[in-house]
Length: 501
Image 1 (cartoon, rainbow, N blue to C red):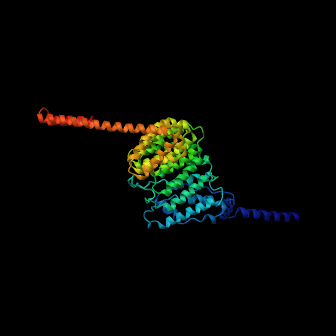
Image 2 (image 1 turned 90 degrees about the vertical axis):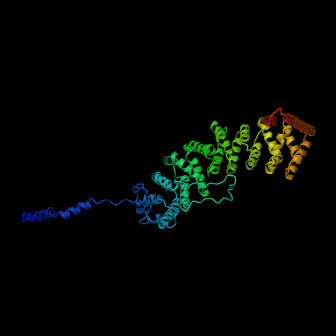
Image 3 (image 1 turned 45 degrees about the vertical axis):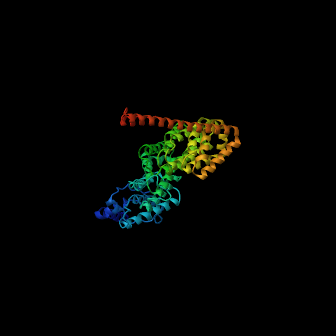
């Protein structure tokens, strides 16, 4: 009985086993699929970032076909993936000269750029090594472009305050891109070692080309960005200085046309201010070979203020540079451009205030020979500005110490002004300076004045003698022509020779 019951129970087990073995193949397949199904991604997993897209019309249509979700609407794990997608979306550029084309796409891009900017301002951890390549790709696509041809203008008639600037129609997008660029550079999340892999020397050269943009808003942003790069990526500093030098060389010796010289000089002013003392020989060569020749072009009024500041920084850091700097300034002193001459006189006063007495002694003679010419200039602004130098107490003290060498040089110019200058303001200033030196050292001043009067008298005697000789020669020629001993052609040649002598 017990044996029969055990056989029945074991038969049921075998039957159930055989049922499983004889199950249809479809049910086995379903169970296999369920057992091998891809597990759900844990919350901490990060999706692989999308590849950098090709920039063309077809991909533009694909990227802008459907709008991407906002960064605030996706989980935290999806934000960086979407961030990269939006960076790629903003890499596409549009034609802003035609306001009727691609209006929807332009607005989508503008709003996306603003969203990216807000996302970067919302907290740290956005600029890691993974997204640096995509960020720089987006910046390159938007910023590095062919600039429109420059407008021609007369340098002498150019006035930066009155001239209407040429504004870039794409500025609504470019401004946000520059703001994003600044956030990337100044962020503590941006590692300089990572950044220099993508912001390389080629990137720097392309960025420097943007200084020639005619839009002053863009030049101002490029100036700020380059200055931040100079501070962030120290390995690029020598290359940036060398590249700026090359721009100056090309401007001075080839084109004499560039829109961003003043902005480049502003950056250099900050860089020079940070130079360690004593100055390196490399920096002194930069002063002599690049900065001082910038006084040569006709358009120097457009950037003279920044240039004078840079030069003054060098002299302030190393007073021994005053002598070569002042001699270079005299070398490039304008002859016929009165506007430049007034600017040079202002710069000269600033440099003299930084000049030590021993350095002043080396350059004072050629310096005051040039100033004497300025005192007697027929352009009243040049004469007036040069006479204003005497209001500078430090300048006056230097001259007073060296008055025995300097008064014989400039007293004749003062006497000439007092006697003959047409402008009443210049005449009044000249009399004030004469009175100043009469009170300082009257015997020396009277000796110089007496020497000047003797020279004037001798000059008049020489002129009278020359006229008398000319009259005698003319009478002799006329007599010989009347007697027929000399031909009219020979008489004219003799007269011409006598006049030249």
